[in-house]
Amino acid sequence: MSTRSTFAVLGAVLPRGFRRFSAASLIAGLVLVLTPLGPVAADDSDQGGTTTIVAFGDSLVHGYGLPERETFPSQLESALRETGYDATVVNAGNSGDTTESGRARLDWVLQDNADAVIVVLGANDALRGVDPARTRDNLERILQRLTNQGLEVLLAGMMAPRNLGSEYVEEFDSIFPRLAEEYEVVFYPFFLEGVAGESRLNQGDGIHPNSEGVAAIVDGILPDVETLIERAREEQAEG
Image (cartoon, rainbow, N blue to C red; front, top):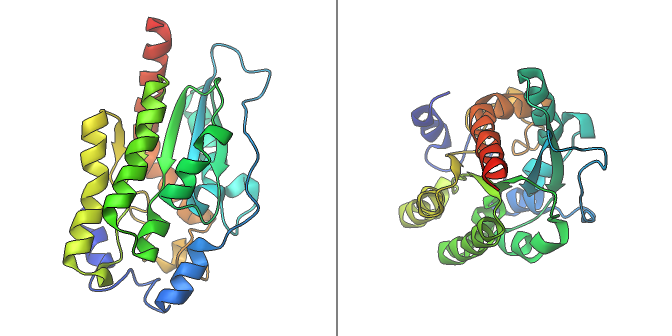
């Protein structure tokens, strides 16, 4: 599905899968907080040839409602290895995270042996109607922390529910491309591209992707993750 089609699906209020729910139930779906993850680290057997990627985000990364092997980090790692990349993808997702709570736990989950980070945050901010200025500030501080540490970053964009009004939508949606350009990170415009609003690709709540939906996300983002890995390897070579 093209970006234009995705905007059409998002439509007047929310994607089709969202329209069946009230604002309260939408928030309950994505804001459901699971037990936080502890510090993550790559396999001790990893050697110089392996690129370690930390997938850092909310329930869309953590894999709400899915077994571990079907989550975004697991499917992405499998896809990369099938493509020929020696890569480990660490699941640093935490259901319910906003950009603020993600920022607060960044030091807790980030280890020195990470080579690159995929940032997937913002969906819960939009569902809660958080001031876009706060969302931008939190994401900017996250990007500052990661890039200052010399890590390559892929920023995944999000879109606000269309029922929040055109002013909010425009301000929120513009956060991601502007930050990506400012910090010169790899950018994937919409994490749920081709999946939002497609009932067959989502779980019963109409919000969280099922296994097939995650596979579609991986298929779409894979070329940009490959770019991320190449950047990380260039950084390592120069270092």
